[in-house]
Image (cartoon, rainbow, N blue to C red; front, side, top):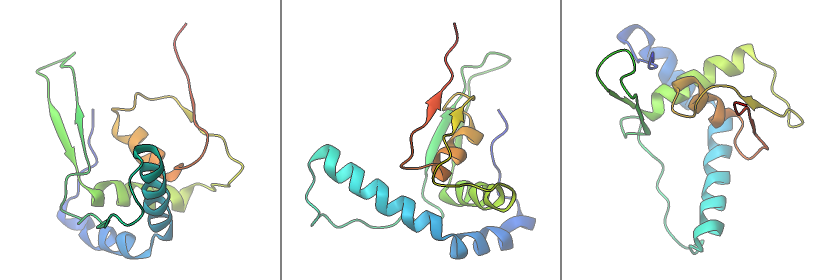
Length: 126
């Protein structure tokens, strides 16, 4: 697995992406609504946005070709990946994404953020 890494030379673009991506605000609102409905949580619950330094997700590997590992991804990693993808891809509300990578893959998680609140089709073996 090759995690999305925030190197010093991309800190500027990451900060720009964090400030400019309107889609992230929509994703957070949609996720909040879905979580609120699913868990029966009142809308009065105070939701606080994550910080760029909070842990967003932990991708674990089984160690197929080496020792098992855990890769921490921060919101800024996913934001940067979503920003780069949004510059290259034309995404429309009518699009139906097909997941071809395991959900533990860094790319799959970034794409899921772009496709939030849409029907997603997963390819299964056999």
